[in-house]
Amino acid sequence: MVKVVKGSLSIIGRNKALGMTFYKRGNEIIGRSCYKSQPSHQTPAQFRSRERMRRLIALWNCFKGASVPVMETHDGIAPYKAFIRLNYQAPATFLTRSQSKAKCAVLVPGLCISSGRLDPLDYDFETLPDGRRLVVTNLLTGLSADQTQPIGANTCVELRDLLFANEQNEQLQYNDTLVFYRLKQIVGRGEEEDLPTIAVESASVPLTKSANPYLFLEGHQLYTHKGFLAIAGADDPDSAYAVVLSDARRNTVSTQKIITTSTYYEAFTTDEALARAVNSYGNVREGIQSSDDLQRGHSLIPNG
Image 1: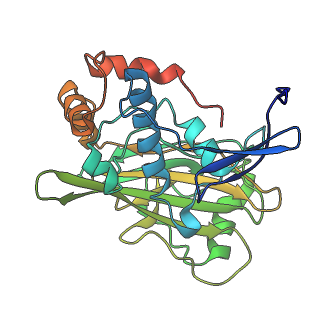
Image 2: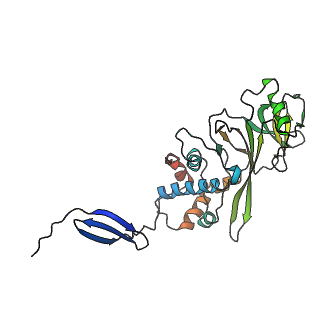
Image 3: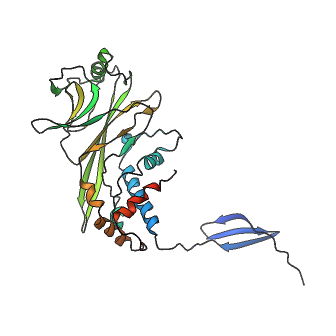
């Protein structure tokens, strides 16, 4: 009779295609199945965290090409992870499983779309007596405070000279770039429910000596209002705006959040919206009583 001396197992490899994990005990190679049965249910805490992540991922995916947010952080994490971390406490919206599969996204106020070391720009909406709405920044144009009109600067160098006159905008430096953002809530109609998404448009205006015309947001125009640089054409209540200051030499930007008057998102923060979302997954354990229960999950911020 041979006496077998048991020793500890050490993993030497896995074959995911075969679903096998291989171990070594002494001179013996042992193969075992590595398939793992995953539970089909979600706890309230799991649903809370996953719902927030789904919403933020959908928002990030709305930014394409040159409009992708610049996210410089002190710990140097990837822009996508920085976006998630900076916006994790944004209002939680509840979409159904089919809306999530359709990559739906809901515009929420206060969304951070850039992060960096430059001083932030200030801006807000202002409505003119004739009903037109402007986004007015804190950048001085040096033009009369009694004027509300197009600035008349059609090239990069003309805009630069206007903003740099008399050293009136200390936060600006030559060759900086102003990036103007517009986020528009779009609502498609599905067979049984709305299919919301967000269209993101950006326009980069370099403050250089270039005599080339700059391209701006479609349907919008740069104005001077009360002596400040403003965006005219911002009349859609379901659009959001932001202006980001970018310094390519230092690879950094200003930290900016969107402003919007859109209230469309509110329909997705109610207890009814929560109930629809929970029921659409059909695997959430009891324990979520209201949307407040999910809002309390804001402390579950991922570390990236």
